[in-house]
Length: 160
Length: 164
Image 1 (cartoon, rainbow over the protein chains, first blue to last red):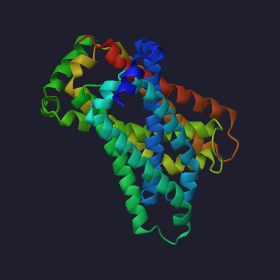
Image 2 (image 1 turned 30 degrees about the vertical axis):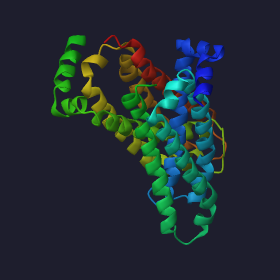
Image 3 (image 1 turned 30 degrees about the horizontal axis):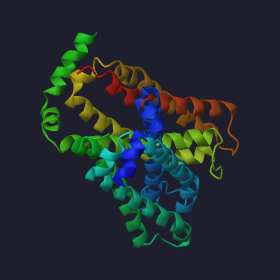
């Protein structure tokens, strides 16, 4: 894997992208915007499942409106994130904080998928089950954790 | 005008909370997390409403219904982002004040974005009760979308103008 990362960061396309201030800036803007869209829309759905937001609409209605933006935000963040990673791939790969970040994001996404699949069923019940509220709370905490570990990557590992 | 703001920045940088943040290894990332969590709520919900006004995405809820549903957490996100941003600014205020990207972000784009958002939100709740959005609503949504992208552009440009 390390060899692949070393090959990736020496790829002429990646070198050209990484050395362009303008392209790097565009990827950073895409990464932040995508991330805000992903976390913002997921958080509202989680808060609705927990009974703390948009109580005038059912959880399924809120999720139906916002989930497409969750996937759009995720695509934007992953696409730009790949190029941000590629420029210093070997350093990122070896940074423990970066590995933890990817793990936390993957677990948070798995929770997002559980909410996505279950929310129509939860909406039909007379009241939202405690288990569902717990899943939503964990999803929210995982995204807060993802933000924290993301800012720790440059702070602790000195990459990014 | 700059010496006046620099004097405030120097005072702010020496307050107990600013000294606590800048001297601690763990406090700065926690404050950054607070700022980004607030921004996720604020910008995520702003963009969702703007995209609805633009007629992009699902249309089962009108822009008025969506704006009502998001209102409380939209502004909660704003106040969390402002609180976190203020703490981050305090910890290195004299570095931020002369930075042109920061000046444009805080002096022009954010006040404009917030005022425009208040107008968009008011318009959506008062006038966008049909599935089809009015032409003014669409233009207003597009302008707000561009304004927040400009804010993010200015924010990520701050390190490029950092002379320290």
